[in-house]
Length: 320
Image (cartoon, rainbow, N blue to C red; front, top):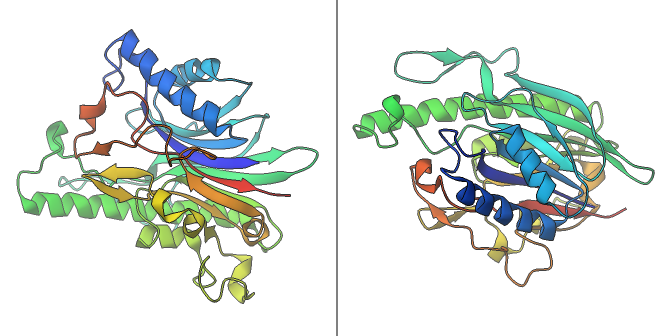
């Protein structure tokens, strides 16, 4: 089975402040997204930036085969949320935007305004057939692309840039702690027996502090000497599959010409040995992507009418 994650980049119908300006542009975006999903042929695909559930229905209607959708009930202020696309009906087991109880509200701007919840909910579902099963959670953490009062994407000075970067980092860290709390619930007492996948757009690279928070206990990472040596952390650890992705494909976004892997798939001990391979873009393709991932800048509005997405899917193939 193929399990993956993909940020669809502002999936709205025409007419919204964030979606394509006209029907033809919208249809071109859907066609590009559908072509990628059809080639990916996922069993279970975590989604981010679903801005309009009706737009996702339009996309699903264009796909080869029959797919089912479950969406989080906790969108952000723009209406974007996470969800799952699956080839069977899945059961929701958790949907929450909450920070862990002990985490204080995070400051969001110079006014001192704070928030007690994540920007987007974390959605967890159970996938089960006669031959296999797993539980998966999808998330979308606070972006590293900064916005400023008045809808600006350019700071007035470097002091403002630094402050808003700090606010974003504080919020992303609190959200990462929330994702880890959901993972702890799903893993239970012993992840060596539980099949859990945590995936999504983490908006940071594999060695970033926020990404490492989701991993849990350090040690035994893929590609290290301790990987095949059992230790006491195995019961709670999540393994990031990033080192299994071929090096030339190890990116999911390009920012200012720089390749970044900010979308991740984590698995528990029970599943890490079942990962047959991992990648970005389309499996079995000669190149990493069905279409090249475009380089983006600091203003997301510049891609309002762009086809496809500014992210590549990240996926794993699981064996029996």
